Amino acid sequence: MWNRNHEAMPREKLARLQFLRLKQTLEAVYQLVPHYQKIFREIGAEPGDIRSLADLARLPFTIKDDLRNNYPYGLFTDGLNEVVRIHSSSGTTGLPTVVGYTRHDLEIWAELMARALSGAGAVRDSVVHIAYGYGLFTGGLGVHYGAEKIGATVVPISGGQTRRQVRMMKDLGTTLLACTPSYALNIAETMEEMQIDPGELQLKSGLFGAEPWSDNMRRVIEKKLQIRAFDIYGLSEVMGPGVAYECPAKEGLHLAEDHFIAEIIDPASGEVLPEGATGELVITTITKEALPVVRYRTHDITSLTREPCPCGRTHLRMAKVSGRTDDMLIIRGVNVFPSQVESILLNIGATEPHYQLVVDREGALDTLEIRVELTEQMFSDKVKGLEGLEKLIRDEISNLLGISTAVKLVEPKTIPRSEGKAERVIDRRKLR
Ligand code: DLL
Picture 1 (cartoon, rainbow, N blue to C red):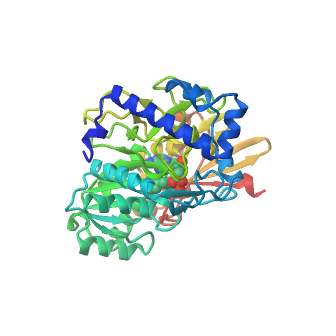
Picture 2 (cartoon, helix red, strand yellow; picture 1 turned 45 degrees about the vertical axis):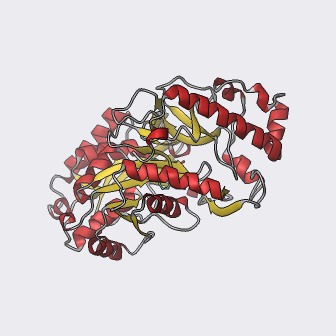
Picture 3 (cartoon, rainbow, N blue to C red; picture 1 turned 90 degrees about the vertical axis):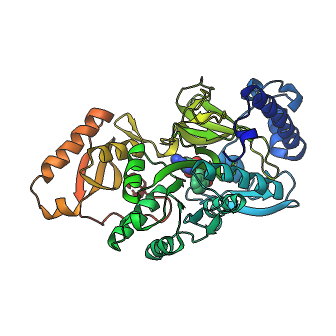
């Protein structure tokens, strides 16, 4: 454990610390950010009226549009005075959002990343290969400063040029790979093409996140790279990677409760759900200086538990994120996440772990086609058995998810490989 005092803090003490920090955060945004002043005025309250952690639920949510409407710096507490770094979300859906960090914010980010990396087995002697993108994306630099804080040796390679990545990992004795799970798969495949056996490398573990990935995908990556794979979660609006991370028990991601307060809400009604229920994760930052967020709606679907973890960390655990409310497909009334389809495909195990979902509309109904790559061997066996395999996949999906789909088996290596966040869904409805 990187920081036992904080990661294993008794829960009563943690709750007191959270409340103290929450009060400070609410006072700060009330004094310094017009948007939050307006919100307090609208509900006729002042920060002093929040008298317990439960009272937090009285405050309205912050949403991505609040950041957009105040683009670029409107929600910052002190303009750019103390800001030493800017990051930005990709902005695939409209205006990008811009986030800022004071020096203290960066220190805490590095601390939380050090915890996450330690959870995945990193130590001073580790060689950490960072293939998350560097730049405005928080992945590269976020992991970078955590690894340096541990005293590990950092290889800041960023994404792309995959053959070179493999060579460097082999030559430099990389022990920990940090990238998206889909890029890890791409790296594994490239290694195969280069006829390099993962056993020739020093690689021990991987720290993968920034996109949903199923436990079955974890098993595939662990087998292909001969490593232990750990999940890491975060989002730019709240900080970046390191908001939550897996420990060796791998029974959920510990959410850094000394810096964030987490709630689960019903995404439709906004009501707070009881512990254990699945819904949308909402996060309040309680130590961020430059850009605190109060009850930020992440759109990520998960559940929380405060049950003790065998690893000794006391911070609550969040289930692996199954997807985003906005990535959820509604096929003839049934809600489906791409990660659920992924899990079924990999469980059948007769195809490559490369797939895409094509959503379209026929009349008033949405349709789903699953494209998945054949293995080289299946492909060379020609048509024999392929119809049977298509049917098997269709039947499994229908039995387990209750939707009917078309299945298209495609040639090996025809689905685009990812170097960052994979594009799993092609939505033809939007192209019309
Ligand atoms: O993806 C930060 C990050 C970088 C996390 C590297 C982990 C590793 P954004 O680009 O702002 O930030 O995207 C945040 O990505 O709301 C989730 O929908 C998704 N996401 C992030 N981590 C996971 C994960 C970074 N472990 C959005 N599992 C989030 C599932 C994840 N989804």
